Length: 148
Image (cartoon, rainbow, N blue to C red; front, top):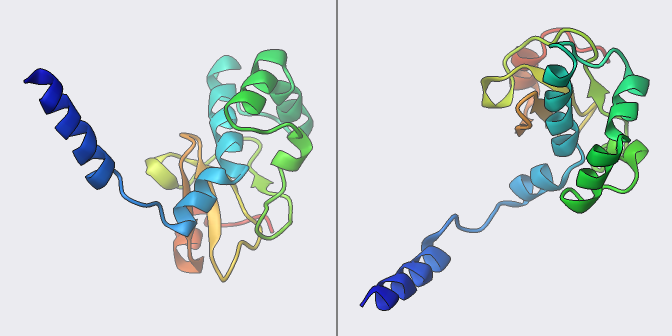
């Protein structure tokens, strides 16, 4: 009886689970911005609450053996320099070095975003590793004074 229940539950989860991911959601998850934000969020508590001071310091952190191994194994990132370039607008991400502000995805501070994005929308990432595609109005609320 229990085996039948588990089989039915498995079929139901397969059929009615999370459902298909939209192209935008897939792009968010596959963008380099997600692992960039995840590791930014990890950097801060490992450095007494201080964010990376600049790109060189952040890249050195990403190249540490354990981090580089995780980037390659889980996130499929072999080229750390390429991680900093948007696959959509082909421009470097704007990474906020220093104090972060603004309420970004998942209610956490914005740490990085696309310069131009695609079709008038940009990916924005928070220190929680959440990535959201936003239009210009929402972007201005998240990042009141962009540096670009």
